[in-house]
Image (cartoon, rainbow, N blue to C red):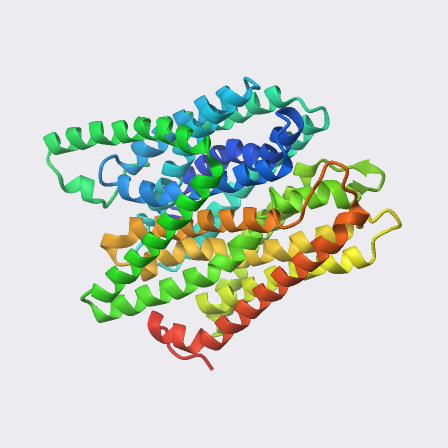
Length: 487
């Protein structure tokens, strides 16, 4: 019997399975992420500002609950059990939204958000447990897993655009249930392979395990009516969620100050600084399904070589860059490091912010060169998305991977959830930014272009400035992380 090549032999069991589970689990989220605003405005006749606010709250709950999921997973429910339970709720949520009424939308979103909010952290924790903290394969595994997620996004966005052209929303949301069902089936087939390897739950007695299981399931189901109620009043919920984020930030600062081990405390400070910088990046990135999508629909010629481009297909620019660039970037970074070239986390964060800023600054240039009707050429939107996507590739998978390195073992789940909570807060800020440009029913591109140009210029310049600050902080961040000085 032939032995595996050395490299393949080093890949931990379950890593490849998680790649495919991630891909299928992403389908439903891709559909809702890219279609929710259009569904609410075109089918349910929500005003654009209400749809943008709902999208902001959707993102905040989806990412904000990751923090809670990071606590539940491995303490009350195994990461494997919590993931599958969450996928069941997502399937039920998509089926409810397919009913096509406002009442079913709220219940469907509540079911879906509890599921997606709690179980995403589980996937990352199942993967991170399979690597030692200093394992050089960790970053590559997360980049590959991120590529798998984006294959799911590509399929979801493509099908969403297909159904969008005929506004067949019921069929679209029925399709969204398929990915969840496939993820559940795949998890069941490889049930033992995906077992937790090192969590607090593994240390308790059988009786305690059963009690925690019951409590975990009760929390999972009990959150559904709570979210349903909060979705009824999105403005108040927006304020509440921002307050919760402030409290979480204060708690993280407190536990960092009180942490007894100096080396770990320094790395926790590095985590907080990088997380704060990432807030700017994600606040702009999360405008894609709301403000940028409304800009694309109303102010951009969505046509390429005579072919009409569905709004959701624009999101696949990002997906293709991630899927193609993820593995290439992992291989390139590995080669650079073998040659002694300095590539580290602080540099990647700073570069990502600069690229995001340049992506937004490309849009005012396109507006300045718009045609007589104020329509911007698609190439400018394409350029913006490519720059944003390369920035995402630098910050997002590396951000996940850095938790295993910077977070003490007892805080890994909470800090992984906090990292995702930042994206939820950014979703609320993205909704605020998206609402800065008025979109009355009779608005035209010529009327709204000046406001969009001013907004994109301010946001782009702000992101470049924050990236510049991080460049200046690179030496200090390296000392906190414990990396040697670079030439």
